[in-house]
Image 1 (tube, rainbow, N blue to C red):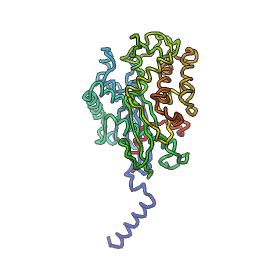
Image 2 (image 1 turned 180 degrees about the vertical axis):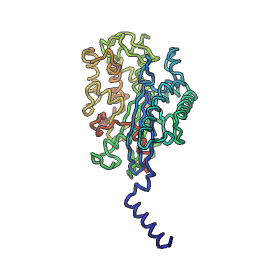
Image 3 (image 1 turned 30 degrees about the vertical axis):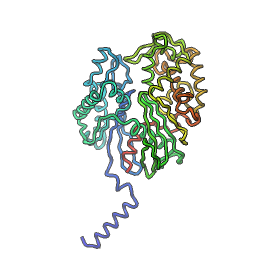
Image 4 (image 1 turned 135 degrees about the horizontal axis):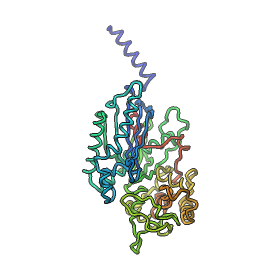
Length: 442
């Protein structure tokens, strides 16, 4: 090729890159399956991803698998039970043997994924799919209780099962993610992408608006993430960029402040007389014989008799155990939104579709509804979520606004609302999307 032709070719390439900047970054679609292995269940999300400043994400397939099919155990337990079985029931111990995680949980997910891959045109080789099994706070608790070796043994079994099913991509992982730097950050990214259009997404239905902090109450932990100055010396600061939108945030997580961990501790708690006291946080008049128990923990000892003072005293004590020094948010200017357990709990009391009315009002609503009897609690005798509304309500009210322990005790107006689908363009918020945006924004 002559010098003139070479020069022309390079000019052509440069012009093409100028008018199609994402083309230089994309090397074709990436297929990735993310398994959200939480303490409340195990879910697979299969995406086609195209790298770009704002990555193109297409959800192709999703599947939720109960990890205890056709068994008498709770269907919303996480895979952490296979590393650290709950309680001392021999039958439960045998059922949750580590080797059973594949036939009970992972193989149904892999089989569903492979069926989807074979049905695609053209079919996709399982070895070409990047698979990430990411466990959250339930597994961090399992490591704390049963040791790191038990958790690593579980991951080894899962990885072996992936290989058996032909999922052999070198980038595959099975591990526990960090609660602040990963789970909390990724949730913050997804929330602000949908709610505030923080990353200037092409075609977003909303204009950009001020970034909000996120408070997520999960089953085993709480994540709190909020924006801070770019030059901050905060030791928990994280700097990142998506679609040329640079941001610095404070990211924190507190293990055991999740609703499930609280409720299980409440079931085993005793009052000053030495008697089990959980019934004092359940709706007055609830028949304890209908209690949907937590495996490995005490059932209610008598019918519900909601007692505000004693219930709140337990909640304060429990929060103090895992957050000895209440967080100081006085210098934070961002508003906060609530996710996870906050949304579900406010919804149970009919308050999720409106701005948060403040701790006193919510506390009053919980007290009124939970002491009035069970007539307003439809299906309470059979629905575990309805049964747990009162202890969860007392807990969320204390966590948000208690004058001594609440996260927003200094400024209750700083907490804006719990997000519902209408607030986020109908999206189901998930740290999975935040992970994909951060990982493939190039």
